[in-house]
Length: 356
Image 1 (cartoon, one colour):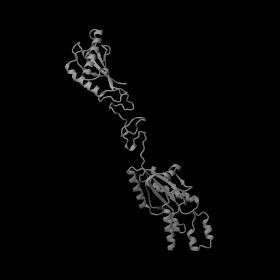
Image 2 (cartoon, one colour; image 1 turned 45 degrees about the horizontal axis):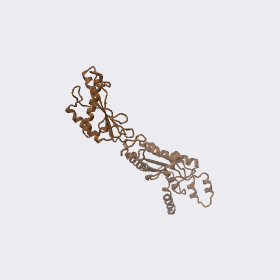
Image 3 (tube, rainbow, N blue to C red; image 1 turned 180 degrees about the horizontal axis):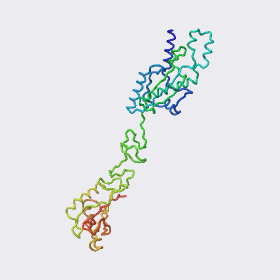
Image 4 (cartoon, one colour; image 1 turned 120 degrees about the horizontal axis):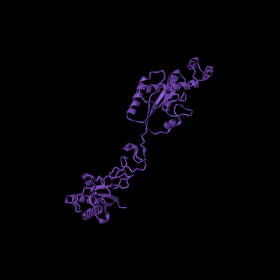
């Protein structure tokens, strides 16, 4: 009897670690790709639980399985749980063969007075595995993590010689696979998604270390769309990232091109800006309201623009970078019928252009 028990123990040791490998002719609820996933996949960890023997109290082990799965899910781990049903060895017509053998004494023959054909074995192994899955799903574990297989009698855990061994082979094996983390870059911006703060950056955009579209000159137009990539801070830009025309808040003596003293601070500031951004040229454009003679207004607007240019040049900027233009009364921005409107129309505009 001791030798029989030793045989049982050795058989269990040999087969206990093999239940999560695949066999030819395996029957599974999952498609081939999912089966290949367990053969070829890379895993951080594989946890094999003790066998759940059919018709035994498995509540303790089931609770352990449930707790472990939930812990990994709570930690945002990508897991799969493989549930495999097994039965004891099929007999088909083997009982009759054994009963006729003169090498078996009657008490041994009685151990084999049962029948389990191949069809029933398949159905039972499927039933065993599905029941364990259902029990775990009932504990509020998402069914998506489970992969159910049934192997009928292809993988015995114990010898079939004794009824105790046959009973132990009717079992369900559960294995938890922790999928190895592989960082991806779905938006192909060369920043791994785990570090990407902007996961849907359009293709071809230049990005920073956070994976967000780069806007070097901070003008709200990303570098990949910015045709004027060195726009100075604070300037309003168009959809191409190029500076819009800005109004310099300069003041002149009435009907004169002489700049009032309080406006020189503005001119100096603009000259400093041009000095710090040598890639830009500038158009200085003079405008007037519609009071007085049209030709006189044209001359006045040009004279004022030229005076501003001279003041900027005097601050150290090369004259070749500045163009003075007079447009008189022909481009009003407000209604000339009011004093406020006429005041707005009397202005000096500056338009930056890149030196190509």
